[in-house]
Length: 267
Image 1 (cartoon, helix red, strand yellow):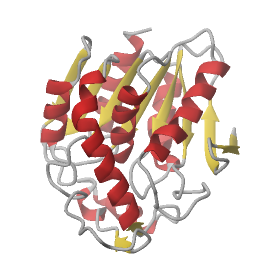
Image 2 (cartoon, helix red, strand yellow; image 1 turned 180 degrees about the vertical axis):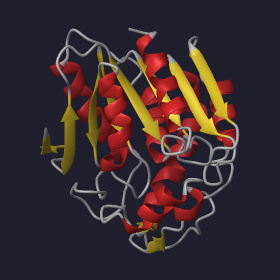
Image 3 (cartoon, rainbow, N blue to C red; image 1 turned 90 degrees about the vertical axis):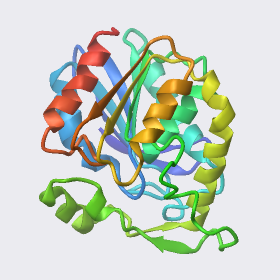
Image 4 (cartoon, rainbow, N blue to C red; image 1 turned 30 degrees about the vertical axis):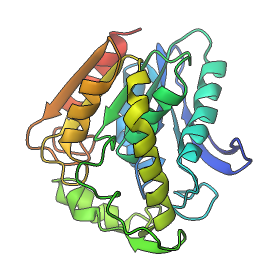
């Protein structure tokens, strides 16, 4: 089921909810910068085959959601939009566990979400190539003092994946954004600073996944997050040779399967 729903400030977010009969769990899936929920169709289908329903949504300013394109005035908009979907998933599935999954900027979102909302009825969180420190300084080195609405070119394409077809379609996908705003970068920078202390309050069960050859978000971000998170149930897996979008790489079935296996072990 696909529809527009109202977020905390009445911004309309595009939601794609797929919950097959007799699901054992549901997962809220949070996408990355400049992309959209539709890029997770293959991922979601494997989840459905395993008996896990999915709630996917487009971030504000992304895909088919409302909002100025790729603009945030505050990093909390990412967390609070996600919270609306999480609350919906929990309310609509009272008898089965809810998990949260985020890739890249979505990984940033679910990591910070875990610290801001420590008492949600969430069984666990999965991160993929999560921006939790920006050791590569992709965002932190965007010059300060720009107009927050100024647009920067999206040059992520060639670095997202080692699969040429994925890179080719990334550039052609009509729902991918070709630019992102300075304001988005400033908001995420603020969030990273906030998380420097708050990471110690992250206590959810967590699986951290990362491609060793990620040229966009340093694998060091995940090493640091793993070291600093207060979770007692935490696992990390680094995939040798894989780039940023590990859910789209040649070995995507293995990576997605690892996430599914981890979830099923916590039901």
